[in-house]
Image (tube, rainbow, N blue to C red; front, side, top):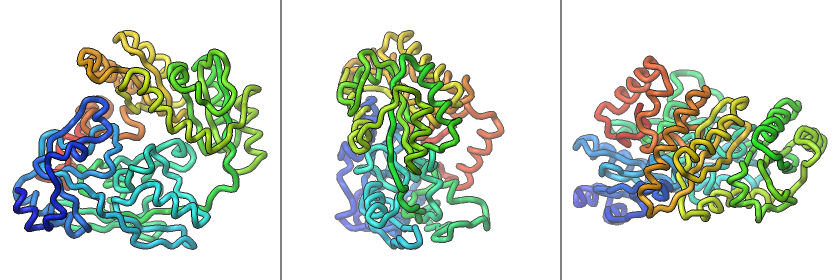
Length: 442
């Protein structure tokens, strides 16, 4: 295999298959690590197509990899195969700031697109965590979200065109710089969020928008999740569309509140964060919805603190098992309280935080990675969280995807007809089942 791939791509593009970093993603913190038969880093889309054609001819599994920041095991070669790392597809192919558009290859970092937009008075609103490591290709593969998803939508809302390699090694292009295109089936949307199970995205056209006139964050603490979620509903009914609606529960605040850039009550039970990006008047409307305790933290300090919340939680025990379920917003308080109860039932410390406006919880169980019994209990607790989300009319994944860790759960969320349609699409576009096998599977 090694010699064939060297002949196909050149020695510099074939990496050490024992490279542990490229055989794992962020789920290594949950104990998941894979094993690659080969790792390649193609230099362009044509080389990606050549690798896929080679694998498809020989029946070898193909595992695409972006920045390795995923939380569902989507980039992990669980059962071997060829890992196709897209890190060298890092060119900005075109940038037209006056037309609010950019075309980038899959390996371009999220922060690079954000920086280019910002330097030209624009914004790329997609803001998943780890912007310095996550890539545009990975964002598209998982249809990534983030705090600003509430107002601006997930990654797919900003993709107008895709170039991808599909079976048995063909380069496909759909969409492009055109802002509207309804000519055929929406293959662009189909490949977005497919987690590399239908093909490998190699580049994309992205929409940008002018930077908002203001960015005024607001924060308010509440005694309980119920009272905090009432404030969330008041925000939604305020007549103003906030840029962000976030929450942190009591357990999360216990780990992170000490460094909060503002006033913190002696026993913080729940925190709601929001942001006005339209006007000072709208900021006042949102503050009124939050109630008398609303405060205005420094924007840079607040979002830097928010980005570090996960790290603060991990520091409590050395590890965590965290899942990104979502429920209808009117069931959010119930879901938050049930996460803590599920943790108690499994003798685990539990907490959650997330995107309140979307009903999206990061349900989290603290653990020590060297404690196998604790890890088993945490996995059992996560199964209960999935069941709870489905029971409340929600979903097993709001933004991270299914990957490997949630395999089999789609069949429990969807009805049989939807599952059959899902499988039919997979079989049609990947008849040998070689693209990221076992991932995104019902």
